[in-house]
Length: 223
Image (cartoon, rainbow, N blue to C red; front, side, top):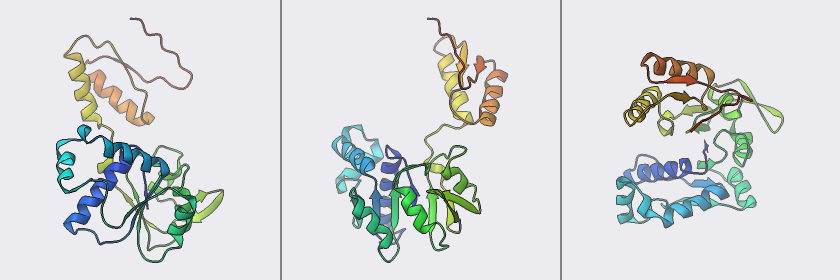
């Protein structure tokens, strides 16, 4: 089970699975993209190969990078329900990425208590989300109001993260300042301890005044 964001992350996962299949690294088992939104967005990716990076564009020589044997895009509810009832192993990609809603919840409810199953997390899991509780390997998690024992294997694949790390953000701030004055930096994304550590790094380098506005705070921007 791969909980995934429908935009970009799902397409990255599909591309990676296709490459692994082509190299024979993973077995030939069904792969389901069980997300109407991810399916529609993947169609957009298919129609715009001009936006691909060099490596992705090179895959067009062998056809679309978003199609391979045993890959199925699932949109209908009945098709989605049939996945859990089908025998044998499979890979299921479904939203939402933090397991807070969507079809992934139905799959998790079915498979989370079985030690034979694996949940692969490919995105950041915010505090107080089901995805975060799964990443923390809580003994029990609540799905649709019912507690379930967490016996499935949990794998966290941080390599799929779309976020820059602290070093990358500091380098970005340096690059911005090299183009002109950088007076203030607002940290509006991330957990408090990570924001505090980044603010300390930016301040220590004298890059700018750093603030981390909280809920309800107002900031006046003057041009």
